[in-house]
Image 1 (tube, rainbow over the protein chains, first blue to last red):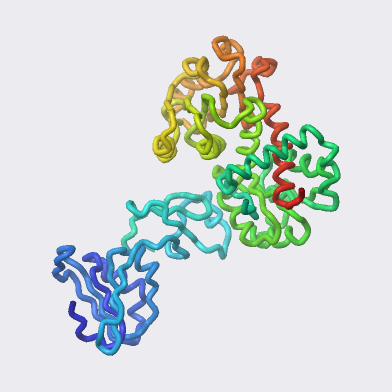
Image 2: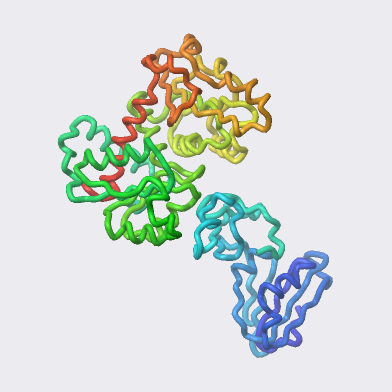
Length: 145
Length: 306
């Protein structure tokens, strides 16, 4: 692993090839004041190809939502040029205000100000159900919000 | 047992809690006088954001027979909802005035939202096509009274098994009991959703699908009828071809067991012919009566009144 260019911050590794920009956008890295680099379609022994994002800044990272977007991502926390922690993401048990229920009969489609909450019901197939109406979320996950 | 605060789904109740409710309801039936003032000075708010006959009347009757009072509304137009008030605000307001809330709403998940904001117990009295746990309690109470047990029989579920929320909730509840065999009787267009079939298979229970009510009747101990709705079909020809296969008539009961119990969550339209009403096996109006007693038991349990 090459963490060159990051003194204190993160290296998001093993991002599914092609998803790097969506992750960049979700993390609002375009608004970050620190140095950010995206590497696309890098060689990966594990996945063939992958994207990588390097962030030279200690900004907050929502690992739950990141795990939902791509559970294969490895978050490397770096401090003073040294690897501090390696976090292997996984699908979170619950999601709040990340995806929206598409069921027009769901209360979340009518009532303002309710959190859109989902629970993981099938880890193997990455299936989430709305906490209010139990409707399965069926949209593609890649970068969708 | 750890007591639940709100009843949103039938699976919120443990088997032990359901047994307790049925036991209490049995005791109420045996000695109603003992319970006639037990909820004196307590108030039930019936917040019905859409019209209902049976459920609202049975909740009202239940609280009145416990000596309590009832307040509320029976359609959104007569509440501040028509002025744009949210479910959350309505519930916060209602919980200032009542000790317990029974809530019906056309939107799925609305009672769950209500429960998040309420300071008193919330009972889901039906949320769209989603859950209707007090109907399932009513069904279980009726089965208990008619069969003397909640397991050990063959039940036929007939009609709209695809969209019928009462059927789905009843299956969820019955899966906890031993030795229940299921016969699913429906047109192909309205058969059980795959995820429920997978649940049945995964639970290792005995179940099958048939396409004709006549074929299933002789082996059944319980027949749970639901309505086949015309609007569920893609074309009218299919509806006309199939609709009569799922209408129960007195004549069809010829080969049925003498001990058969015929249930229906009501309202019925034409899926059970009027001539079945006089048959001693027809239990659907008795079932409506059981709905009142089990709701009395539920109110007592949720108010923690012994």
